[in-house]
Image (cartoon, rainbow, N blue to C red; front, side, top):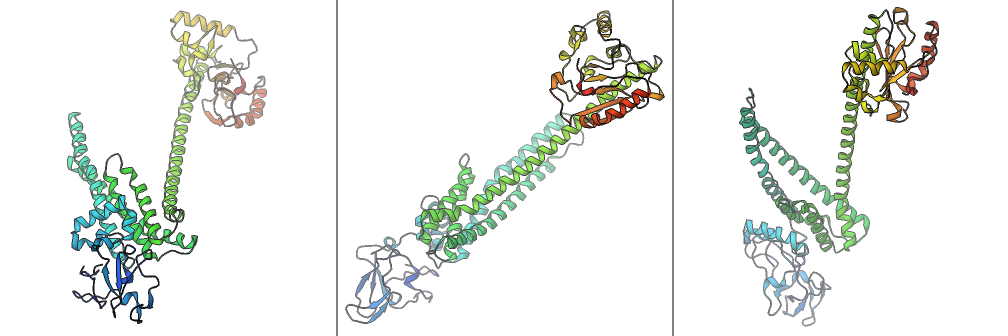
Length: 492
């Protein structure tokens, strides 16, 4: 039992005042091992032994059995029991509170060691009346040093990575490459910023954690100690955070901190393990759920944004592919008195189209899926000119005389029988829609691109196309053309 101001030994004193510094003390603010301390009557020196859980007398006020005087525990003279040393009377110790005697570094490391392997002893050795400022200062020093050591690898990377990048840029002959100093400054700045943010967040969370833990202790039942004991438990158990700088096991630091805090809260408040676990674990679990939820929402948003961009790029690519085919068809009509080809494959002969351009970019169709005159577009692609011309002629001859529309890959051609001049400006001449034989049934929102006789294009979805089909057939009747079926249902 030592003075908390100057560390002077307070045994065998009849007055409850430190002879060294004059600070007052009360034996009831100290904890002892049961039966390890003699509480002696200040009048007759009769010894009594503390049998309570904190080594105190029970009751703490009574009449002396020898002299009959009324005495109180805080008035008595304290001595270690016969044969015991001072250290043997202590149920535990808090090296941080004894650092002026042990040394700052030993006091800090000793507290960390107990937080890691003996949190129950650390809780017993932390007096209830000890300063909250001391606990806060221990946690602050521990977090600052831990984050500072943890940022060292990043600072080293801030030197090595820029050197590699700049050397690579110089060897590649890139002019205007950022300087080594610029890269190093950016990396170092990011490391320092991360250190500061991580430290501030952890320290603020530690205070919030202590408050939430004590609130839950109060809500869950009676028999708990003061808030001071909860703050002691959370802040002194923070010594376990040093594990985070150890490779491979660093991820256990927070879990270790939680377990240490549970054991300290259980001992400090003398509550059950279940109650201490509930009180201590709730705040970290809620924080974890919030962080995971935030990242899940952010990831979902990022995936959705990426999918939207991919969809947009795909749509733009499909629109461009449909326009190329439309332009090739209009060019053929312009050079053939407004007449389209007997078969759309003839566009490869005079307009420069290739076999792959009959397949939409966003479709599952490949040229090996497209039948042509008893073979496929893939076979056609590797044929010589004369052979290719023969196969295309055979495909055209296979079309019925009254054909309304025919499909090649992902394109349905609907120009048959029309003269593609100004009167047919709104006529659908080609519709790009995925081949249902390969892509499966098309839903209402499948993108569809319609090429018109005037060379323009409509970007639609299947449901809109079907809604516009009656109006298109009215135009076809005025032009003397047969009604057009839903182009998306046309197969090879």
